[in-house]
Length: 368
Ligand SMILES: *Cc1c(COP(=O)(O)O)cnc(C)c1O
Image (tube, rainbow, N blue to C red; front, side, top):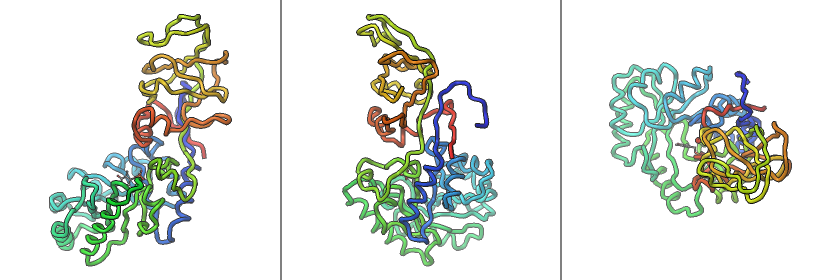
């Protein structure tokens, strides 16, 4: 812990779990296939620098981020490994990208020719839009023009080519197979195949061995989370969850039957009962829609009662507990476990989004 924390609310990140997930994935890959560790969005909320260091230790050679700021944050932390910026890059970042050895995604002819004034060297991965409909070259003509432009530009260097699947985590393979064919067709446009060809996100990396190429982009599953319920049933090895969310009971009181709890007085105690207050709320990522969730105290599930506040939340206890009693909101306590997938379901979203909604107010504590 680099900084003193007083409030006992924190996210614990098990870096060994992240390393184990990468190592187990690597065991399923051919030796020439590398793991690109995707650490965008602050390492899916786990902490970008710590996750990046763990991933490099586990044998990843390349890190991937979404924005210039994310790439620079890793460089400022002293990380020298190759970094691939997956998203669109504003032209104002080109010079800095070159200086800091950050590989950019080339995704359109228009963007590419706008790099003409850059001295370089600038490393590029060519993005093919094979059906995701987000960014990338969509047809042979535009791709040929782009490759011709790069050939006559001294500063530009193609080090990779990639695409991204829209439905790799779904059972129906129709679009997936169309994307594979389209990518392979456009790959034939290259006179010389770039050194790093990569197509797979976690889902494809886990279940489509024929999509391993030279590297796979390992995001959500590096953190121990399955990309979808379907993939969860098809995993080639078990994933270890890295993140758990903790706090402690800060206040305990007995309330009488008929007492109201929280804003709007939405909860009325049906009997005399024990209520705990915990120091975590929606400003931390315990979103108000989670008001029907439970937390773990003494190895048992205890329900949230009333509305979740910005900084505090009330819990109905089955018996009096001590102040300082440990509370687990996501993760294991004794034999019980609350999964991030349960939060995602309650929030009608996916675990990816839940990871990204934990705020900066919650310290990340790392265990090795
Ligand atoms: C975020 C992202 C990934 C990682 O996907 P996961 O499903 O988390 O493994 C891979 N590739 C691209 C282009 C991405 O934007």
